[in-house]
Amino acid sequence: MSQELTMATAQFKFNMGDRALQLRMTVPVDPVPLQSLLPMLHQLENQFVGVAVQRVEEQGKKISCCAGCGACCRQLVPISEVEAQDIADLVELMPEPRRTEILRRFAEAHDKLAAAGLLERLQNRQGLPQESVDANGREYFFLGIPCPFLEDEACSIHPDRPLACREYLVTSSPEHCATLDYNQIDLVEMNPELWPAVAKTDPVRRGDTFIRWVPLILALDWARNRTTEPFERPGTEWIQEIISRAANPNIPTATVD
Ligand code: SF4
Ligand code: SF4
Figure 1 (spheres, rainbow, N blue to C red):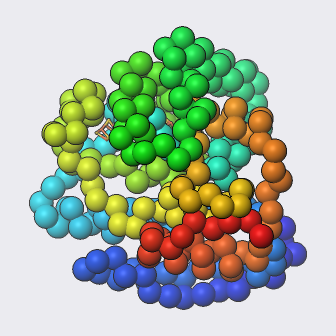
Figure 2 (cartoon, rainbow, N blue to C red):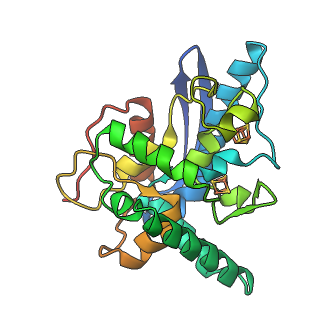
Figure 3 (cartoon, rainbow, N blue to C red):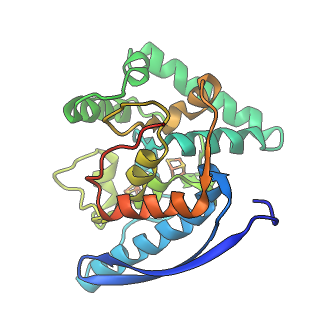
């Protein structure tokens, strides 16, 4: 982010059920692309997750997640379009031979999805009913495709990982994650969920009524095929809208003017 941007600092209280989070954010007043605010949104998400973790720990539960435990990194991870671009840029800037290896993993996953007949369904994912999204998610998981960033069962892009990855925590045994047994998986309740708030704030087409999302595994394809340029708004407006959407997920999806 340019140092010449004019910045403003806001302090506010975000109510999270039985507790309130005091937030202080320094945000550009000038127009910026949403992507430039992702590091700030990662910090915000970490604070939301911190409260959710504190809540379950006060109930005597313990978070099971740790490095070296990566069954969940074989799930169909939903990310916002701005995060898909960010992932593509991250890969593009990787030094060799790492970049080539990561590209190879994405390509291998792409081939597996195509061979299983799931690629086309994932490409036509927007607006599907939740049952179809869930069915595709289960089918994806049982193909056993590791996230291209998973190394030694740990996330190799941990500081830059998507919002949905930050929000997925459990207190149940990892063995249930390995079989995707949702009757046994005890997910930590995340309220708010930030990734849909971001996805709904970054509209690219007029009139969409659903959350536009990208499977992490198709992030590079999405960025390669995108036909719209990112647009800019004052950073203060982006953040204000995202916070509002996080507080009230029922605000209608935004559209481009
Ligand atoms: S969600 Fe499950 S598989 Fe993923 S880190 Fe946590 S316990 Fe391990
Ligand atoms: S980005 Fe990291 S945390 Fe997210 S699925 Fe991939 S390896 Fe797992």
